[in-house]
Image (tube, rainbow, N blue to C red; front, side):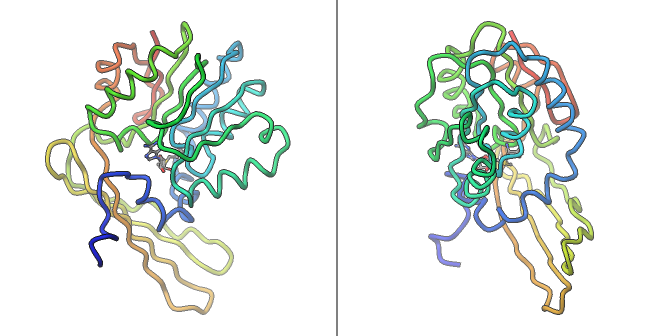
Length: 245
Ligand SMILES: C[S@@+](CC[C@H](N)C(=O)[O-])C[C@H]1O[C@@H](n2cnc3c(N)ncnc32)[C@H](O)[C@@H]1O
């Protein structure tokens, strides 16, 4: 592999390119977390300021916000072109989403944000930032949070950097082809995990194909986030929670 193509921790969003097409399959197992997210979001129907969704991916969280809070404006931030293409497609399908959702293609650190935010959603993204990067982000975001505004967060349920291997997708059938995915993590320096995803696609008369991808994630807990933001934590599931003042 040429050095230019080597996955690095810098600009982690670039590491989503090779596997963006599989993202909707990999989050299918997180239905409990999404249900809780929607249920808790809908308790904030009085929100008037825009809701910021950091790392919108293929649109799972944007749809959850739009359907749970049918009046709010949504600021969707997604720097990966491949992930954003799916998000854009979803938004374009629906007139209401086209009116309410603004899509920014820069990383969150470079996006012009509104004066006030009614809520922040950061699902599956904060582990891409190390502690100084998160502190910088909180300094940018906290003054914009309206009084009582919630911060919804979802992390990988790995509070400490440990080696692991997990079959995340098993025999998922789409038409004639079957999809399997194994995720494995290797603890690197400090709190960093190097996460490898190995997708195997077979069936339909074509030879099986294997796609491997590497990404990086800093392991820390929801409690760590509460401590670094000075907010209180209400845990929703092992990997998700709400931070609030
Ligand atoms: C695991 S996906 C989560 C997608 C979505 N929130 C969900 O839960 O389905 C993480 C997303 O964060 C995005 N991301 C990575 N670095 C980012 C940054 N600096 N600013 C905004 N988004 C970023 C990635 O491109 C990726 O689409």
